[in-house]
Image 1 (cartoon, rainbow, N blue to C red):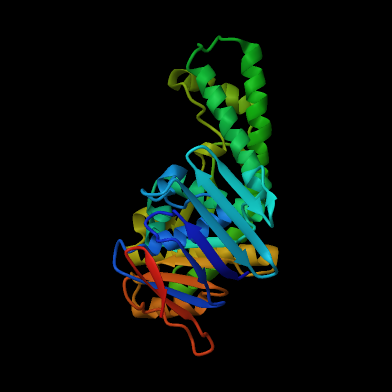
Image 2: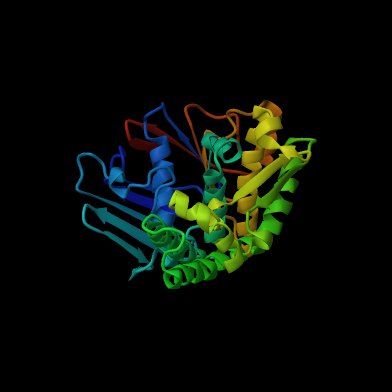
Length: 353
């Protein structure tokens, strides 16, 4: 997949512009605060109608603008527009309105890689669940609808748990439990279907950066990744006391290990960096294997924190169209068969060099 051009208006600190991109390497160079990450974010937004760093869409609208608009076109005559003002978001794909976000995500296969990815390894379980959920959503857009429905059920169930005691309405308990089981197990089914491939690819990419073995395993209170009535009844007293649902896909984790030991305790910072990059490369390869076309890679200073040897290795592993944002011409340089294009950005204004 190749992003041919983007047009944006009212987005972050970026001056309104329309840009044509190279099919291989696109360097985005500028000082801190110039707008490099914002440009990557605009590309990501064009493909997902959401930000990779802000949960509130309205924060994306430039301070002096009443709306934002992002248009993007890719190869094979694919195109999309996302419009947002203070009252609504309108999404079109190929000129047609898109009513559900699950029908939109994935039209432009985009993967963001940044130095913040280290928190997938060293951060809380929510970071790893978010990584896994995004990876699966791009492979199976229907997964998004499952997640939305599951989170709605958990909120309803938590509200009920906060208002009753252990001997509360058995009928309502049973109804909510059945909803949780049905939707939760669908999420488990989709996760279980993708985990073996993620595990294999993660280990394979890890061998490029380390002599130690990288591995990932799924951790869940639910045996065999399956919710059932017996499990829920076993934890009911605890759930009522806490007022929240304590088991299910929303509480699970990915256990990352190096030579069989927990990365959070035993990996060096360099190994953590290598592991986070390997996870994103595994995600990209899974997308490629599923769709038959390379996803677009957005790198926000990724590689700058690696030693020279690992930077060179990373370069050799990057496939397809790449956008690399940095404060200076990065150590990642395209090979001789890559034409590439250089963009300088200053105070939100992008110029082609």
